[in-house]
Length: 218
Image (cartoon, rainbow, N blue to C red):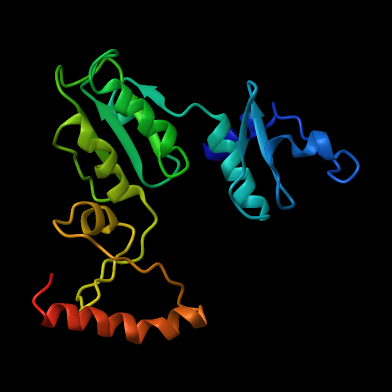
């Protein structure tokens, strides 16, 4: 299914390139500061490609950008997600308080999941969000909580640590709760395991956390 979708949407794309040195004014209109730079121009809107040079990554990004952000189906049994996870919306009519939140989520997470809407909506009232392929989680809560709930399940994440030390190890799935839902201010170090400066800072950072805790701070 995914291969057929790709061939259908990519067949409508015209590929072009411009020499930035020979045409600096035209090439610099989008503030390009590194090469190569790739943009998809769709209906006059520039969309920069954020990934690397791998052909598969570029094809996946193009396919997600050009296909509809959501498919409409008559029943849950009709959904056939091509990727895992998939999100199935149900229970809200167009114009409902949830519509804007749902539309924003479909656009923002279109590269991370397949989205399906049940039409006509069922159940008759409220919003049901069901995650398929990630354990079958079902959302419960107000519309404003939908983005955070989706981020918890769709964000790329390392495994959640089973134990924590003086410095809390945050991963993608726990980031929102650990940082933005905390009752305390949070000092967070963003590091890379291969960065020598990060390794040099680690002992002093851990020591500071231990001293803060010993002094009765959170």
